[in-house]
Length: 186
Image 1: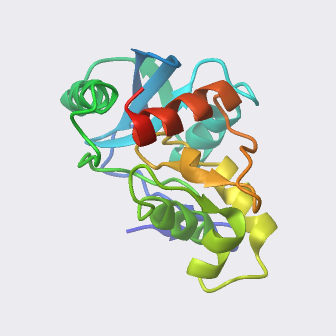
Image 2: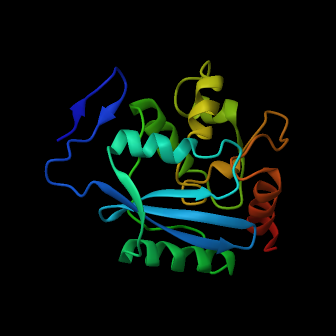
């Protein structure tokens, strides 16, 4: 049962849980990723070279009150296998159990990101409107930027209101690659 921390933030009660995030590197065609599992759920798919180095991992460690160490639990092997299928154009949707670590608002945004169809994009404004909060564009953009589970939670499918590619944790080249892969198979 979650305990309540600061307003809008859920803190996990760790009495019966492991206190570690097991990580493993994954080499994708558009950059190196770090996959992370907490228990039997994927909590991390982040770029090794990222816009704000270490920010996502520090936030996860704090929210989950967990250390990080190398490991290869089955969930990470399955996540890597599904990424392999995605990059070979054999998979459009993922079915890995996910653990969202963030505020209730962030979790709502991340859940909505999973609803964006493969090969399509949506603007931050349309994403905010889909959440029933059309005035919350900036907050939605910030939550999008805090997504710890790239690709599985497809924040790369969000663009500026004019369709332009905007910030992405793995860099705009990785975002361009992922969108091109989904749209054109390359």
